[in-house]
Length: 152
Ligand code: MN
Figure 1 (tube, rainbow, N blue to C red):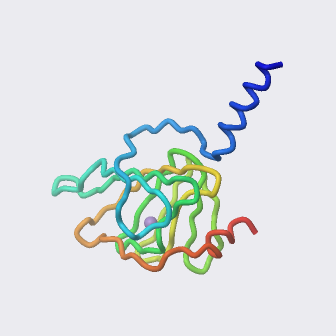
Figure 2: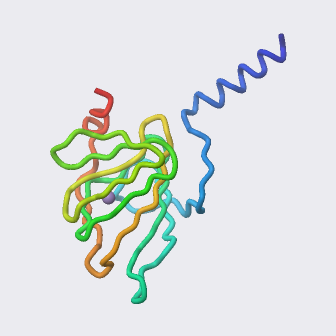
């Protein structure tokens, strides 16, 4: 009986955090210190674009509930989701729930945001070309109302 209780407590402790245990393929990097997101986000630039191959590839990991501000990529960006469950929203459209294995194409210049779902961490690889003109343009934070509209 004691043993059953012990394992029940362990199970509850593991599930109550809401964090899905994850194995990361690449090191998740450092916690982002920028002011262009809500919650905790880790970033790691895996491939720096250069004159030989002009492709930036980074991995971003979000704690449950964390999300980037609204933003645009002047030359677009492709997200390849490697772990967890996340939210993605383009301006004027409903929030989409996205999962490990999904690929998202963020069109050039289109305002959008992405981040983790409330109960799951979320990791993707972000690939972008045309580095000279593809500096992210940051917009306003995602409000709780916008974020929570995914549940309705
Ligand atoms: Mn984006």
